[in-house]
Image (cartoon, rainbow, N blue to C red):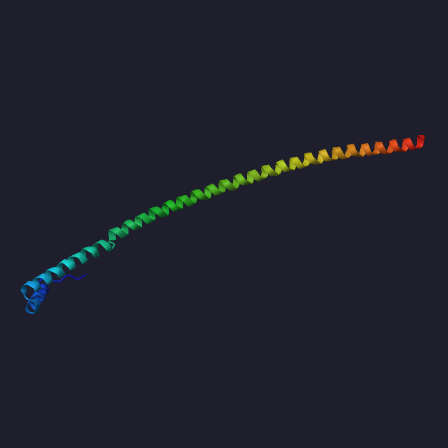
Length: 132
């Protein structure tokens, strides 16, 4: 945004005074000055300064550090969950093996009981047939 110097304003006023008259030329120059001042203020408030950029860099650095810390914590949490899951799976396997082992022994016991019962029934039938 380029502001006019006093000499330039005076020259512009002199030229406008010839065409518009003294009062209108003065009002136009004042209007242009006010507009230039408003534009300058708008420019200054919308353009990032070095301090603004430095502050943003600091904020980004803080956020990066916080994010890195959060990621590290998440990795630790995932590792703990992984270990807990492995322990749970191992415990479940052991319990399942124990249940299967117990079921096998029960099954063998009942098979033996039915086998003995079947043999006793067969012997009883054979003896009943030979006695008559």
